[in-house]
Image (cartoon, rainbow, N blue to C red; front, side, top):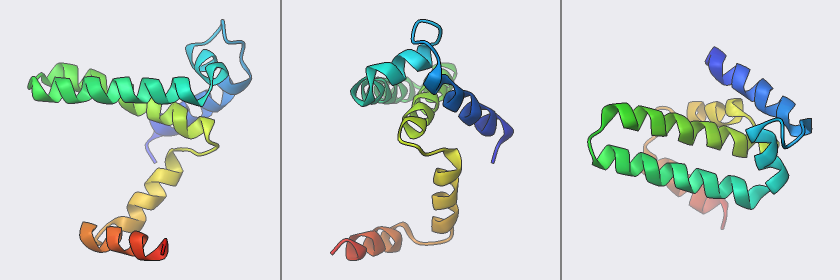
Length: 108
């Protein structure tokens, strides 16, 4: 896993017990899941707009914001970037159609 992802995961975990007025992330945690999901949605929309506008610099900034807020969401749910990387590793080399079909058949 990238060193920055590890460092961010550790930092985000440490903010769970921080005072909401001392940290943006702590304030998001305190506001709860709905506030975190709202930020993920906002950042996803801004990422789409930046891509649609063919603005590479803005796309990088918005994608960084999106990833950051996704990491906050993962931490809030007791997960981390390694959980996602493990899943991506599991899927690597498997047809997207086959992978999706295996999830659908497993839930039946």
